[in-house]
Length: 341
Image (cartoon, rainbow, N blue to C red):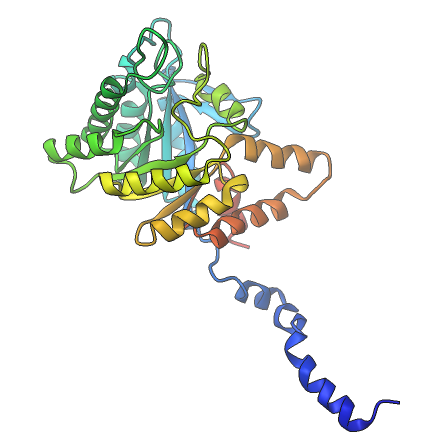
């Protein structure tokens, strides 16, 4: 038999182990979050084609569409009424002859990104517009830069071309340019170009500083029509095991003048996101929940493996725990509604 003194002594050591009272209520469960999801964290990807009247469902990317400039305004207006604050634009040139080896159509004044920027700014002056800066959607070979004859990246010509695109986006009214190519030196070249164009004081540079090559981009490539014609992007995007390389890339982009960083993909790279939050502690860190991750959650929900809303919250709260402040997410329309409830 346990004596009363021993029982009381035992009770004294057990108090701190009783945690459930701290999260027994839905509200107290939210109180346990160090940070909570808010609408202004979300950035919604928009695929804009050069067909002005397009509204095409992307089969591999559930609930997502390619939009023409004549169709996108009503769609965005509905999201803004629910609290949307920011979008990131991806141009999709589909017309015959619109692609060439140097991606000329990327910054065509009549092209999808610049035209979409102008019409969105005209209708929604307060909408924050980011533009993805890359050449893969616009090049005939499908790679993110200009190539040498042997198919490898010509770094010098690539960063010059990418910087020129970024500057022209800034001139068109884009609030933020986001270079996603991962080619060495492009942030410095962009920043110098913005300074020369007298735009550096008002255009945010958010680099994809820790972007990994991998198997999660298939639906995006369907949406953006950006599959490489030959080879892959492993020579200039990070290998999946390259945590040290990611840390070095983050430091490189900070030194070159980026104003914020993106980690991509997100779910399988939370350690890298945590590294970014440490290395870039004075900068906004953005998680990109990429197309494959998004499609996987939908596929799992369709098979009744999980509940879509619950797993989406679980994933996105994971990004916050890892240190992200912003999230590029295809779930943005849903979160604009979910966060009202």
